[in-house]
Image (cartoon, rainbow, N blue to C red; front, side):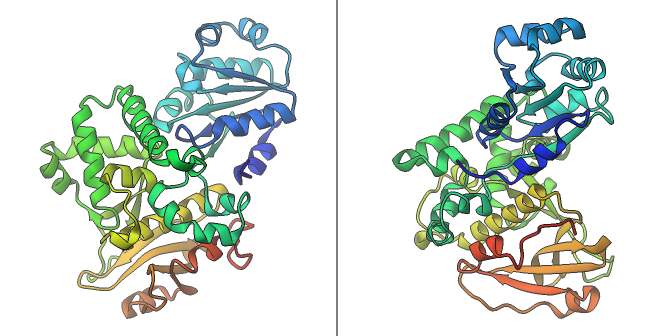
Length: 383
């Protein structure tokens, strides 16, 4: 068992008269975590994909639903987006039985969120769960072991079922990728062209670490720009990719329009690239390392519910900062540069003059794991 960081926050949210919504892609460990809480609090677990559960919670009165759910104080509704009008059903339950604690999980925010946002306004807490973070992997393995595993993590990613798959690692990763990216996403009515989805995903995979132009992607996949934009928006809401925007003060020399798109998991990225080769034989080590580090930062900030925005920065002609954390209401910046093997880098003078960063850290293959487990950088409180 891995110790999931968000478990403490989930427990803190329980029994305060609100529904807890746990979002995250399939296979990241949501069911394992909620079943642990069910056992801890003597609760009841219901998988909403089961026909009898689905029928019992669809368009029923609060009394009928409560009779089906039973007398447990904690109820888990796994894959709650499968229930028609689930937002209304949850509202009826929490309004009628305020002492009842419900945890509802969903594999994508575009599906479940669309159904619950209006009915549950002010009645819920939201938590996001991603593939395992470095800190969570260290909870099962030692820091030294994880440092030795770094190349494997950069190639195959950090889904629990992949990390522990042994010789079947590629088969498990391909199954997660195919089941989630295609079967699940194609069930969403916003995705009408499976071939186009695959082309966009591959185009994004080949552009990781670079600034993305929707117009260029649209041209390469032979679609219009707005269709590409809507598909990427769905991929983001499905926790497959995320955007990183440029930091700027509207100075002429700063890039301020294009953003970067990264993948939450290197394994899915490499599956789309159809490349599981060792790093020694690859020419994209820098992009893989940057994607891994930036995704770890996003997971870390989400796990600890940290405030402040994140960015990259670039001059129009040369000079770039890979990742920037904003703290103290935007008054303090911490800058990071990803260099897989080289421990030295220089901060662009223009960036220093404009933003006066509190710190500048070069992250290498040797410093990445210590950075995420060291008490010196451990984000124990909101910043």
